[in-house]
Image 1 (cartoon, rainbow, N blue to C red):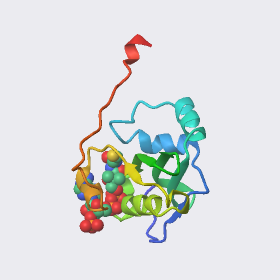
Image 2 (image 1 turned 90 degrees about the vertical axis):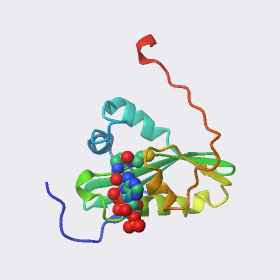
Image 3 (image 1 turned 180 degrees about the horizontal axis):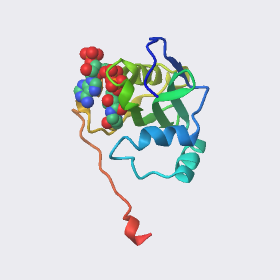
Length: 141
Ligand SMILES: CC(C)(COP(=O)(O)OP(=O)(O)OC[C@H]1O[C@@H](n2cnc3c(N)ncnc32)[C@H](O)[C@@H]1OP(=O)(O)O)[C@@H](O)C(=O)NCCC(=O)NCCS
């Protein structure tokens, strides 16, 4: 279904998406294209905070946070439906996460990205390159 012309998309941290709706977005991104319904359902159960953008009943954008609500928060899986990109939705999702009342004591918000230009515009810096990553080999599972 093509996007509607109305500009008033809605944003919510109270209305979690269904895993199937989320997979529709995940499957548009190379880093999430192999994610399964069961795993996405379990991920949603254990995520501290979600931020969704909706066009009526259609999920058009998503971002999520894992956090201790005091010292650290990490933002993951920010994604906007391809048909809706370039309309300010991604920016609004990150803005709403950063200004969420439950996160207002968090000292440091961290994320990893292949889109640094998008996050730099939102005030993120890549000066502190202290991150390291360990990836589980799926073949050995
Ligand atoms: C990256 C993404 C979330 C941006 O969402 P979006 O709704 O299309 O972006 P917005 O319209 O809110 O753009 C906000 C600003 O960022 C800029 N921007 C958007 N994507 C960008 C990119 N890939 N690189 C640099 N700047 C970008 C826009 O030009 C805009 O600038 P402006 O405020 O000066 O006009 C979206 O393109 C997406 O889902 N991409 C695929 C998934 C992905 O790579 N997610 C990142 C996970 S780390």
